[in-house]
Image (cartoon, rainbow, N blue to C red; front, side, top):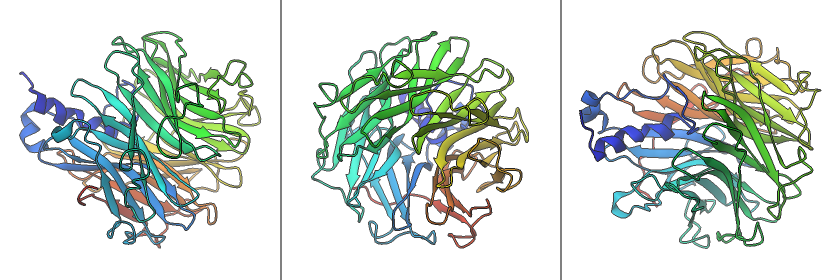
Length: 481
């Protein structure tokens, strides 16, 4: 049966909602299955995704993602702020919600997805992601800056927004996956830039001045790309970044090893000037393999600083049937595996509760006491039932027995029966050690979804003082800015 362009846009819209990483793996359950005969129903729904979260210094929580009109496939940056008790913060755009469209396609709108957030010292909010620039697959890095009250900061970029195109070739598909602030107030975006139609992609970094324009003091034009080119189609993809106190930029994700589906954790560091930092792993970049089984598909989905160390969270393939475990890596400041962490710098944790045991971490956050929190999804059945999963590791990399049940917390959201609930972000309150986990929860069988936020106490129990028994759900209905 032929599928017209409207149907293609309706089908494509599910990717950013339930698949934070664009890597073409066989994700089966948490991406909604769209049957052609169902499209008349499915294309008249809306969906909200939660892809990033951060706790402000005042204890309020920001949740970042996208809101999509499934009737036309258009999505906008979506930002919500919750009070300390989990209720909507009405000092933020009157009702706690803001939608920001980039609309690079003009009246056609386009797919604009926010997936990262940073807070400036003055309280202004930077939200990063990507915006669709053409119907042929062109996407640009995108970033917006909001004032503390949720209004657009029109002193930034053009009317509060900025986009960046790397122009490497092919479809010019450039997608940012992280935003961070440099010590001097400059703004750094990290993501993936497409180089060829064969699937060749590179790590990509853009640095902007505080005004939202490319910073020529970084790599000559504000742009930097990094290729691993270890094999296969040379697909290298960034899923997160951090900036160190000296201004060095760390980007992490995955590097393809072979066309058989073999990927490794990949990480690179550049100096504040944009040069490869050769004090890191000798060349400024390195990969880390778990190689536990199957196609050896291992990938970092997140990165953070832990003192002078660098930690990455993600997944490691266990066998060829689709069994994946949560995975964490800790590197020293010079890029070596930290052998005080689980003896070889690597640790995995599997829930293995059902289906093929597909358990994957999408986010990592260090605690002030040296422990590490990972959040993601846990497969329960072959029929699409996934729950939020949270794991905590001790400073030496072992599973923390004092957290949840044997170091693990399983949290069903289940807004519709046994739904596909995917945790995609985690933040730790440095004062209380409370843990905020944000993600996306299915709301009906036709593909609708809500952003869902839970708060755990330091023991891994639901904090019932937060929202309704520890759970807040967010659906965006505001007019756009």
